[in-house]
Length: 270
Image (cartoon, rainbow, N blue to C red; front, top):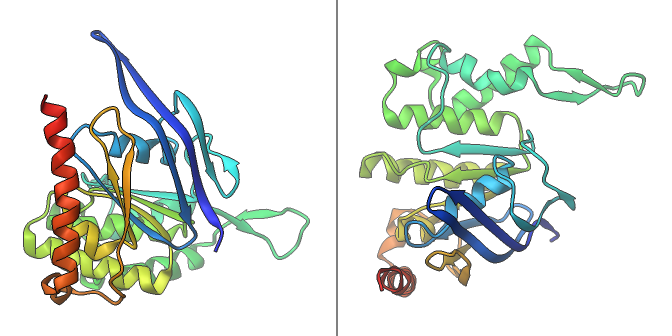
């Protein structure tokens, strides 16, 4: 299976009133097509910075970031992003939020004369209906974000990201603000969707259990300046569910990854 993402010698420096802050320093990572990667590390280690560079929202200071062999230059519909803060348009309904990106998406024409065209209203409706059903919000199609719970809002954000059919899905602590029960259910929903849709996923989280239950590999980041300390392969077969968390191997992996993250946390306090 080919690598869809290649990060080589990535460095990011922020310049502020107090001088330079090196957020990332020499990050190297390859991600295969349809792979689910989770990233953990102490606060301030550059996890979100790396994701924002991958999304095209930030430029690297140095190094190379490739997607499908092409250097990333700005945002693209090929890279869907889901943030912790939902980022929904409050004046649009559930359906209109999901449809938003589709109105700007171009698809190949049957004829080669024009090359690309906009989606028709019928095509957009068909896709919206599919993904509203996927996130189980059929009864809330015409509801506004203010009428939804936090979990429902995040389901809309996930559906919107999936609807434009990106090659890569970038998720920055999407369940971090939710209660434990809702978070657990959305983890399960995301796993089931990923196994069906087979997208390449990069998922940032502070939660070790979440990282293990979702990921094929867990990337452990060092304390700032961020670099990759270790990559742990999760040798627990899919499908996984909450009962998986009770297994001896899951607990063993959790304790090991936690010890590595905590070691970095302590090193940052010295």
